[in-house]
Image 1 (cartoon, rainbow, N blue to C red):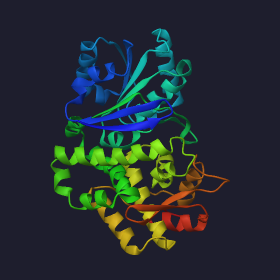
Image 2 (image 1 turned 90 degrees about the vertical axis):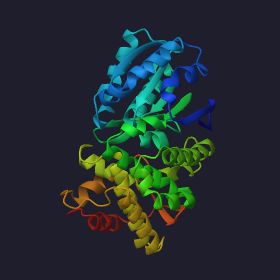
Image 3 (image 1 turned 135 degrees about the vertical axis):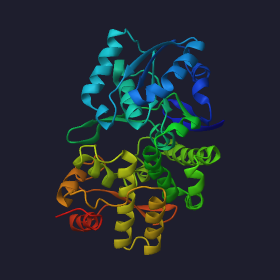
Image 4 (image 1 turned 180 degrees about the vertical axis):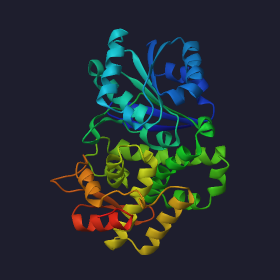
Length: 366
């Protein structure tokens, strides 16, 4: 088992990474919480595979468990589901020192984390990511949110968990599409901070295809270490360092919004967004064409989409959705763009015309 520490406003919390941790979750959670009541928040596909082992482990450590099921998919991250969870906690008599456990991917972690931040002005929660994307990215750093009809993550809070548990063993049962989609976030970490990780990914397609345990533990630990360092130094995104984690996401959220969160998995949208960011960086002469080529090539090699050809998406509609992004400042979008492998810059004065050109180069229609 590998342990990575994250510094937050509430003190340090640990990220635990290793095979078989789900069956040990109760003992690890017991070390950080003296309370005995737990509400597990999950989704049906996750519950079928992982809920009972988690409950057994929690009960063995003396926890009294209840479970709340969210519907499947990104649409679960809604105001409606948020209030359903509030009502369930209230009816169950959950108090401020009781605990939530998020068992699932980014959708579950985001909604459960936000409810934990706001129910009775805050209750503790634990993140147990069951997707590669959650284990390398969304479970770390305390960003929580729900979506509005107008855009993604427009209601949210910074709310650090008390513990993050990443069981690499659960990745063996992930559907191939979901596993491929998650690699977008791993590639992101190589681009923003780690030429070594990026180079390793360029040589490791066979290990990925075999679901090699050492490969996944290595990329999860490297990605988590990078994110832990960034969010420890800039927890509330006030020092401009944490914003680099948004590489590709401004484009990605636009693609998700205009397709109603139904066409692309989040990681797939991020993959297209990273390709778009690389194309924009090359067009603005921020990076050489060779860097753009390496980035697009590695996304393709891991099975991620890099365009929206044939989707019939209008460039103007995507741009309109992007303009509702919560990260814009003074009415302008901010883009994280690669200048080299392992280094990115912030671009704030990109014209709408240039963004439209990039969207059309990806396959958007006029």
